[in-house]
Image 1 (cartoon, rainbow, N blue to C red):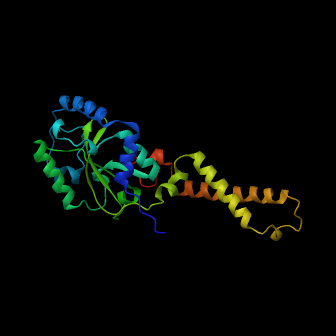
Image 2 (cartoon, one colour; image 1 turned 90 degrees about the horizontal axis):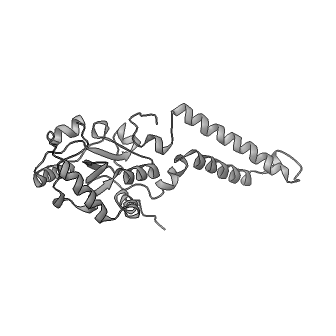
Image 3 (cartoon, one colour; image 1 turned 135 degrees about the vertical axis):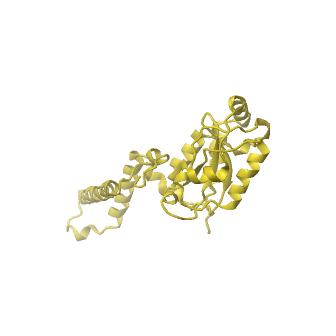
Length: 239
């Protein structure tokens, strides 16, 4: 049976639906927009230079609720799928013309100039060109972001599962334990001993666990890797 790929936009919507009601978001965003009067430079310059900004002068009545996300929605999706949320100046992929056109349409529709653009994408997209599912956002203010455009391919359907061990140290140790146990099960004990009193299995498991943990720690330190919650906004490549 062919597995469907994970649509990152749909996964983000699911996270948001569990934490905030749409009406609550609109009420809070309306308060933010009433206080916001900042205007910034043109979109192409902002995208290329990564001009910073924490808010944009959107018109509240013209915003689509489905495109509004809080930083906690973004943080959770980045941690679950091991993604980064960084300024566009760190993005090394190509931003399509369709995304630039949408930004220009938004500027015209809201009679403002947008800035402070950020992108959700896999870490490798901030080092080299690839094509996996980036999402482009513009800040509204007070840790809210407005979704502008998605391009590229959907994520692998098992990416969330594959990235689960990297969420925290507990997940990593549990993963190493399970893998060590499975490896011990398929390893013929007769290769190491002629007796089968029972404790040999657990002794072999202990050595398998130590070996696997040593490999993981060596790889982690050698590559400068870190857990998902520590890298989702990190600008350092070896995270």
